[in-house]
Amino acid sequence: MYFIVIISLDPYVTLYLILATKEIKMTQWYVKELSKLTQVSVRTLHHYDAIDLLKPSIRLPNGYRVYSESDLLKLQQIIALKFFGFELSQIKTLLSGDVSFIEHFSLQSKFLQEKAKTLLEASETLSSIITKCSDNKSIPWETIIKLIEVYRMTQLIENKWVAKILNPAELKDYANFEEELQSRFSANEKKESEEEWTRLIEEIQVNIDQDPASEKGIDIGRRCMNWVNNLYGKKYASLRKAIWEKGFMSGQGSQEHGLSPLATAWLDKAIYAYHTMRIKALLAQIEANPSEVILPLWEELLSDIYGNNQELKDNLIKEILDNEKISQKAKNWIKRTYQF
Image 1 (cartoon, rainbow, N blue to C red):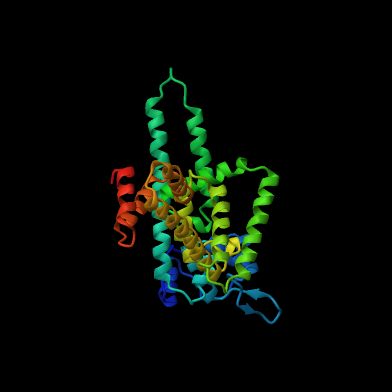
Image 2 (image 1 turned 90 degrees about the vertical axis):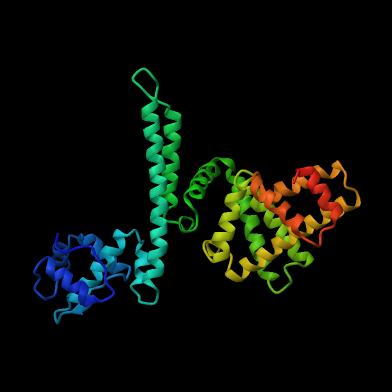
């Protein structure tokens, strides 16, 4: 190798390390010469040039473009950042000098740790299968195929924004969710769903200056939740919540779905207003007539908001019991019903 993988905020330190690894004459390089020197293919260097990541900075009198010593230093940094798992678009941003290396390194470190855990779990599962199987036992191919499919889906999504916000368990759920999504809807149903979402986005933009807790805002919140629940189902309610809170509300993924930061914040308030309205209406019914007849309506409400996630349901019940504005009569019904 002609260089070592290291990155430094001081280009002179980086240059010293390169030269210390192999004596390099301070000069200029054509693309083939730089490729031979660094072991980076000519095709890759041409690609970096095309996307404005690394362009030859010197133009000779004969019109040829060649790479300078500073270009070599930049290539060294690109190689180092690729080694740490950064995408080319991220590297371009990092090398622009307008962002914090430390902040991005911290995020990437967390992502790599989570990815390592996922791969380790897959390895442990395979080891368990190997231990349980012998020559006279059949291999559980269905289990292995399922593992391969989940791993494949994880690989497909690891470069998406979801990989930056979800923990390993949530990432597995997302992989399963994406897999199931392929066969859950017909082509016509998928088209209708996309058209409905487009209409909702348009309505949000039209009503962005209105109070999200208004009648119109609550109606949009209701329709959005119906759309989202149809997409995720009760099974992936906790995943839906994680993507919304850790992703959309922090600016990750929302714009890919047509939502600006302002529209995302507005919709979050509209959905909250819709849920609050439903909860208050049922609590008023419980206070007026705390009978078991209301239980199916209450269960339906919790299911619409939280799916099958019992932990989220319990958290809401605890919040209600701690809320001083809720009548004691309604609280007693909830305590009796859920044995809190």
